[in-house]
Length: 393
Ligand code: MLT
Image 1 (cartoon, rainbow, N blue to C red):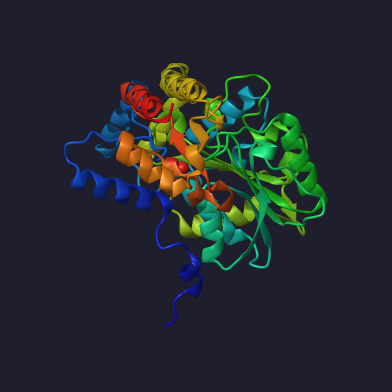
Image 2 (tube, protein in one colour; image 1 turned 45 degrees about the vertical axis):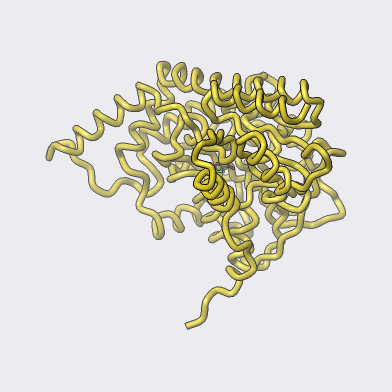
């Protein structure tokens, strides 16, 4: 037996596990201290009442022989795929139901999608970015190059025509920087992908935070994107499904390589390796798209948006450079005092009892930066900012 040696090239542990361990150790050593967690982007509000009701009804259906369901379609039930289809239509994007695949979340699909691409593709990943893109490629031994992000480009890298990539990851609103691509910037990436016969893997997990009419919610709002992009989205941040697990991936029929639609490959992959999301969960997810559901989930997102505003105001008060916080649940701040990301992590934990995520965990260009999330409790978020202002002003 031989192991996959590429796993040895990974960091020792996943970023958020390390952050959680450090918080746990600190709390054990200082049980009297109240630690406020603004690190992992995990939601804190409960599921919407309409979602709970739909899931309760579905549980009852599962308890009766006449309405019980066993295996469902691997790509999701039509009632949910049609609801997703209508949601896209609301943003002016027409999709076939067959282009929509229901999944157990964006993270799994972002990793699993790599199954359908040859190992000798060159993968371009923004730096810094959500670590899953990089780690899943390293696990397979793929060559990774970086689209460099920094203060000079507002942490929104644009394509360099001199650099050739086959698979390009984009995330907007971005995790971790909270920066959001404009229509023109996304059009530049679509143009690049088409010229280079590349595919864009577009992570739209935070699209529900976009509230202005100009910013695209989906890459498919850009002309030509259906020929070069796959979009991955999730109910986690939209509707509090981080623990419930449900998402969706759109693979357009127009996305074809060497005469083969990628949609067919993904369907083949999913039908072989995936047995679908539980019926009960899909019923809950479908309720998100009802009129009542949309109102209820919007309220929760507004709550998190208010948290983001509290942090934006705090950053301004402290005079700290930052991006994000508008159309995004993440604040990406420069570490004060020239500290490294992990130095600032320790400093903030020890002196303010606030836990964030070190920017260096998202890539080399994240060194010297720090991420805070707006998914916390509002009173705690306020308190965290007060503590930070007292410490850092
Ligand atoms: C994060 O904190 O970056 C997110 O929680 C990661 C995720 O959604 O998996």
